[in-house]
Length: 178
Image 1: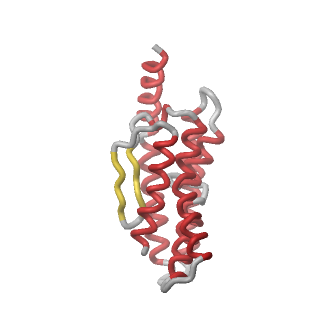
Image 2: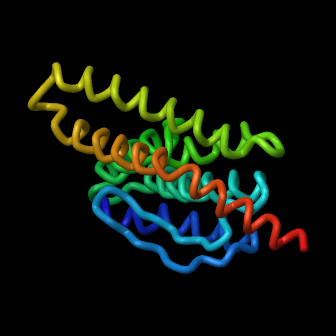
Image 3: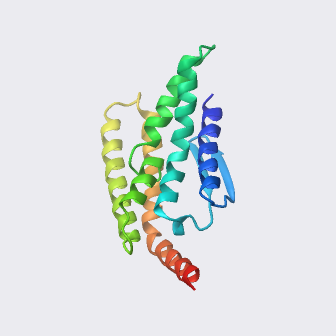
């Protein structure tokens, strides 16, 4: 059920990308979630990136509403999975959907990289606090610690390469304006 929920969630992102005119190169589903590869994603408009980020949670809400409206075997499990998936993805930290949406909303023209850097620092701080708190409730919180550490590592890697990403985006924007 978790895998099907992830598929539907990522399908929401795919539909949003298609509706916003973005070309999706690939979609990979992994046990912890999914990842879309969209060339030129960072050069897309703020509105496009917000819709893209919220496409997955919107699909999750649709599944949740269906599970709440229709009784079927296992509906309680489906409801719990959708609630967890929705709550997790809307946390405003990168690389989660909530963090992607907040980053796009807060960006101002010419300050895109500083906004993303601030969100990365915010995300890392939140995750460090989360891991520290969760450690006190071991062993019950072990899966959450693993998830938080995974997200923290992703943020650290993105932080390390932010200057290169910013330079690449600037080159792409110059190409588009020619």
